[in-house]
Amino acid sequence: MATEKKVKKEKAEESAVKTVKKQAAPDKGYKPRLQADYEARVRKALAEKFGFKNVHEIPALDKIVLNMGVGESTQDSRKAAQAAEDLTLIAGQRAVVTYAKKSIATFKVRENMPLGCKVTLRKRRMYEFLDRLINVALPRVRDFRGLSPRSFDGQGNYSLGIKEHVIFPEVNFDKVDKILGMDIVICTTAKNRDEAFALLKEFNMPIRDR
Image 1: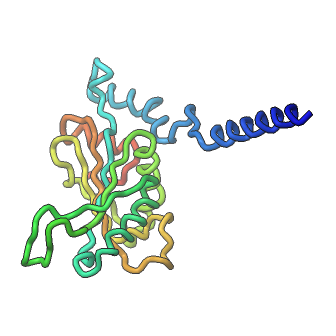
Image 2: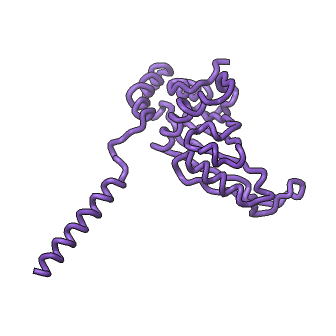
Image 3: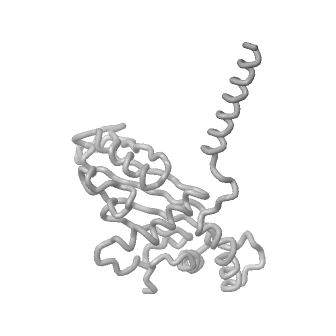
């Protein structure tokens, strides 16, 4: 009788563990809204616009790099770690603290001193972040008049600067000690500025025409 109860208990525990793992595991069938839109509409629109014959020629998002510099970390090394916590909330992926590679006496910077933080997003998290950036964060910028069309590097990448990281709703404004700026680099597989511009505009990126 005791053995039978033990077996039932073990089976119940195994069932509970499987349920927890199933709930914690990401849904493999889930696709972010922008990714689904790219596969269903954007890819075809770009192929028609530029006359691509090979599907691998069609521009696509490659990665998004977020970077925050923390000047005050030269006086207080904990500032960079605090910024990394905020960036982790914004990105949905753990940010890493960046350190100085060499000493610069003029700026009171010593080698291996924490200076900021960064995170690189790919695949699903990349699309999710871009969606929040376009539809939630940028509309909260004061006196926003669109993004500059001059921020392409000529190799298919686009860079923009955010003056206040609190425009992202994931950051609790009441718990922020200091408002920080952020650099965002959107890397694509486009071969030139025109292809990258067309790709981002298909995602409704608010880039001015001129």
